[in-house]
Length: 106
Image (tube, rainbow, N blue to C red):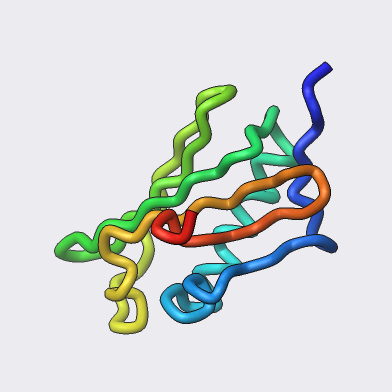
């Protein structure tokens, strides 16, 4: 039987890299996107978010491998978010707790 990944809100952690590089409202948006997929679909232990700054907006891609899932969200291009260009974030559930970290911290 496959384990159930719940990304329990009571056992969520973020790394120093997330604290230093990702604005709080974007952290909350990513957790919210994880919560949506947990409610509606089968969820993989690894959620991936990638950011790209475009001319008129910032693109946030949310994906997982099993089952395959991909969603792209366009965010308003504001100065505070420009630091997210080419940033990749992992959100990992290991049953006991969930951790949000920069891919470079993995």
